[in-house]
Image (cartoon, rainbow over all chains, first blue to last red; front, side):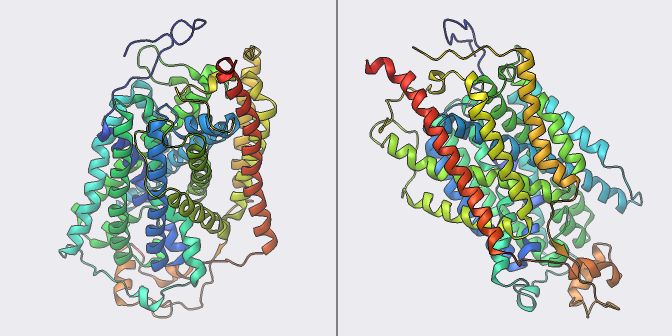
Length: 465
Length: 127
C-alpha cells in the first residue's frame, strides 16, 4: 500500500493496509462472537430458566439482525477505520463519536478480559480433572493477553488469518458435539424435563431478565466494520461478511442451547464457566472433551484476538482525530498497525481480567455494546434524514426502514430493563462513567480537535445545516 | 477562518490519558473491588438435602455425577440460589432518567460541535 499525502502540513501519513476480503470479515465478526456460545450466554439460563434462555437467544438474534442491517448500510457508505465511531463523527457529531469510540473500546476490552478469564478457568478445570486442583490461573491470563497483543502488533493479515483458522475449528467443534449427541455418543441422555417441571422459575419477568445475557450470544458482530479501512472492497465485503456472520451465529447459538440444556441441569448451567466443555464432560466421551477443550480455547483466543484488533482501531482513530492525545494515532512504520493503541490497552484488559468476576466483566461489555446499539437507532434516522437515498451512493440499502430501527429501539429498551434486574449498580456506574467522560471531552478535550477535519467523506452538505 | 487548535504539550497529553484511566478504573473497577456492585443471587439451602428434595430426577442426577458432583449437599447452594427481581420504581425511574438524559445531553452537545464542523467544512463553498 502506497503512502498518501494527506495535507500540505503533513507531507506523508501512513495508511492501514487494504488486504482483507469477505472471509476475513466473517472471521473477524464470528471470531469475536463465537466465544459467546462457549461461555457467558448460559448466565441467561441462570437469570430466567431454560425456556427463557432459548427465547433470549432468538430475541437477541432479532436484535442483532437489526444491528447488522442498519450497520451494513451505514458502514458500506462510511468506510473508514473505527466503524461506528467514524459513522458518529460524520452523522451526529464529535462528542457522540467520542462516546461511540469509548463504547467500542470498553465493550471489546472487557470482552477480551472475559476471554482471558475463561482461558484461565478452563485450564484450572482441566487441571482439576487431572488431579491438580488449585491451578494458579493468573500466569495463563497474562500470557494469553500478551501473546495476542504481540500478534496484533505484528500485522493485521496474519492476525485475522489466524482468526479464520481457529474460528473455523471452534465452529466445527460445536457442530460435531451436536451431531455426536444426536447419534448417541453421550453416556447420559438428553433431558429436557425441566421445561415442563420448572418452565419459568422466575415467571415471565425471568424471560425479560434473561435477555441481558442473551446478548452475549452475538455481542461484537458489529465489530466487522472496524476493519473498513483495511478491506479491499468495503461496499461488498462488509455487508456480506456481517450478514453471513449473523446467520452462522444464529445456527450455532440454537445448537448450543439445545445441547447444553439437554445435558446440564439448568441450575448448574446458569452459573457454569465453560458450558460447552461441561456438556462434553457429561457425555463421557474423551474425544469430545478434547475437541471442546480445543474449541473453547480457540474460541476465546479468536475472540480476544479480534477484540484487541477492534479496540485498538477505535482507540487509534480517536488519537488520529485528537479526541485523545495524538500520540495514539501512530501507525507502525514496518507492520502498519496501530501499535501504540494496542500496547496501551493491554494493562486495562489485565486489570479487569485479573481482578473482576466473569459475570461482572461480561456485564460491562454488554452494557457498552447496548449503548452502541441504542446509538445506531437515532444514527440511522439522522443518516437518512441528512442524506436521503438519492443524495449519496450507498454500497447497501437495508430494507423496510424504519422498521428495523424501531424494533432495535424497543429491544434495546427491554435489554436495559433486563440488565437493571440484578445488575442495576453496574448500569448506574457505567452511565456515570460515560456522563463524566462526555463532560470532560466537551469542556476540556474538544479544544484540541480540528473542526473541519472531522468530516472527510466526499458527501454534499447535510440537509438542515 | 478555520479553527486552529492549540498545540498540546507532552505533559498535557499524559494528563489527559491519566484522567481517562482514573475515570475507567475509578468508576468501573473500584466498585467491583470494594464489593459495592454485584448480582443479587442468594442461595436458599434446604435442610438435609437429597436429590429428590432438590427436584433432580434420575437423568439429572447422572448429569450432576458426570460434572463431578455426587453429593446433593454440594449442589444445594447452586440449585437453590435465586435472583431477587423485586425492585423499586424510584430506582427504575432514576435509571431511565440517567440513560435518556445521557443520550439527550450527548446528542445536543454533539449538535453544537457538529455545526462548527459543517460550517468549517462547507463554509468556503457557501461563500
